[in-house]
Structures are given as structure tokens and as C-alpha cells.
Image (cartoon, rainbow, N blue to C red; front, side, top):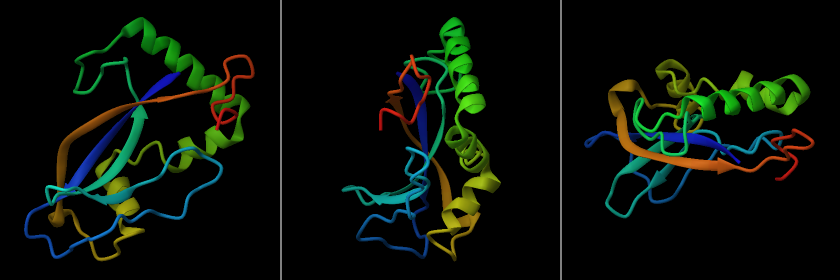
Length: 145
């Protein structure tokens, strides 16, 4: 399993959008990630995300807390191998791996909420670590799915 960190943004209070349902983009069947989407919580917060990056440890929720340097090097080696041998992973890296940057994130959100602007959103404290199964022998992150 490789751990990926899923981070969120959220709509600011007073943003001119209200959702009673979840919004997802059309899935990319070549990658196992959902892409940036909007989900409404029971407490009234609408989360936008996720941005998915490789976690640098199994408990790396915030900044450098929980970083495992040797484990991270192993994760990076596995991901680099995936990029080299699997065009699907290369496609993911090219299309989604940089959604954590403000510019790319806003562009991804605009694909599902066209009128949204940076003034409507803020970073959320919500972070999740999501383990992704892959076939270590074949070396394919996407074969398990």
C-alpha cells in the first residue's frame, strides 16, 4: 500500500453557492482517483477537493509531522517506477498530481462549478490519509482496482 494525502478546501461562509448534493466530475477510468469534487457535510460545510499527493509517512497529516524519511524514499521509488512503466500513472501525474497548487486547484474546481473564484474558497483543516493498493510484483498501481 502507498499512502496518499487527501487535502481539502471549503466554501467560505457567505459564498454564493449552495449544494444539496455532491458534485463529481466525469471519472477518468485511466486513474483511480476521483478528481476534484464538492461534498456537502451535515454541519453545513461544503468541502472541495481532494488534492491528492503522496504522503511522506503513514501519519503525515500536517506539514512535516509524521514524516518517515526512509519510508518516503521507498514510496518515491515505487511511484517513479510506476511513472516509467505505466502510461496510466504518467497520465495521472501529468493531469492531477499538481492540483494541490492554488492555480491548478481553482481550474479543477471550475470544471464543476464554473463561476467559482478564489474569493469564495479557503483551505480546510480536513486531511485524510488514503492507502492505495498496488501489485508490487507487477508494479502496477492500477492493476488492483
